[in-house]
Amino acid sequence: MGQQIKYYLCFGDSITENGGWIDLLNQEKQEHFLNAGKSGRQAQNGPKEFPPVLATHPEANHLLLFLGINDLPSRDPRPSPARIEGAVQGLRQCIEHALPKLRPENIILFTPCGLAPDAMSEVNLGKGYHEALPLLEPYAEALKKLALKKGLRFLNLLGSFSDIHFRDGIHLNHQGEQQLAKILANYLNRPSLYWIGDSISLGYHETLREALAEEFHYTRKTGMADANRNLDQAQGANGGDSARVLAHLQELVQTQNLWADTVVVNCGLHDIKANPRTGTRQIAKEDYRKNLESMIRLLHQAGKNLIWVTTTPVDETIHQRHQKNFHRSEDDLAAYQEIARNLMEAHGVPVFDLYAFTTALGPDLFRDHVHFHPEIAHQQGLFLAHKVKEHFAQ
Image 1 (cartoon, rainbow, N blue to C red):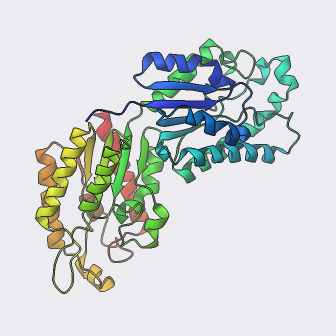
Image 2 (cartoon, rainbow, N blue to C red):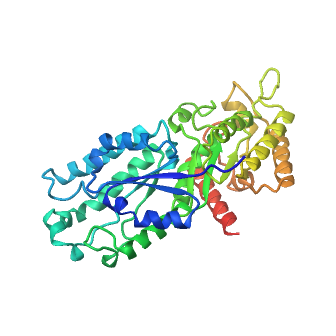
Image 3 (cartoon, rainbow, N blue to C red):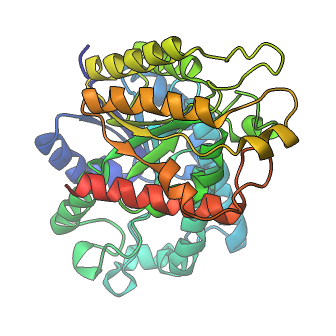
């Protein structure tokens, strides 16, 4: 199964239309960058202009949104907060239009490159671009919040350019185009991770995401709100048992929506759920083995890497006291852990031992039958971020 070719639709203003950075990226990379820039375009006009552009590029499977600098100058008589909100609202509607076609992690929001008032032309000074300088930081913060809310990627370009990169205070010169292409190439070439796990992974998610943000493209199975409504149910971002994780990964591969190069899997707690009356496990040991073997084979055939995270501890006394609907046992946990470890070792899959790390944190771990206190989850996120960085540094 071959790798999906990446087509980046670059929807922007004159910084995009001029296109020097796009030409440079197309020379250096196997991906294709499609120039959909238009001089003078404002983000607030995106809802009208974006749909027909997207429709004319059915091959586009990634989107770069690079707008806003034309919304902020003082030629717009509205108060500064209204200018910022107008730009953000325009981009928000573009995103809503794109999401039925594109996965959130395939959409990247860029801030403007910045402004150089000391190098600004008389024409641009007359339009009030120099007075937009104080608005850039709050606009960037608003874009970051929008990206986080929608599950998009975000690149803050502010601070990466100086006066020598601009030809008129706004537009990039050749040196600026080279700088932008270099920044984007480095950004897009970061290692990419797709994380899928049970409810334990929800607890350490924010710490992990923040710790990896500067060096990795990290995303996880979506649906945090649904998952948090009942942490014992496999719904939304909660990957559930190995059969459900496998089915999700199969769907992503079959639809060519598994964008990341590396998949990190953390599941097992749902598999060992046992009926208190019959003792029947949710996923039998042999089926667990088969599911994991299928995951390994699926990702290998798709050209993806796999990292396995061991299942976290279970104190069955605490568990059975707090949870009457299903039981978990330490013996089952050990048996399923051994199955996973042996399989991963046999196939050369890296294993991050979250079980051993968590166990070593002390006796007071659990806030309920199986989930951890926030400070424990925070430590788990830091540990996993360290293991990721250590792995990719090898």
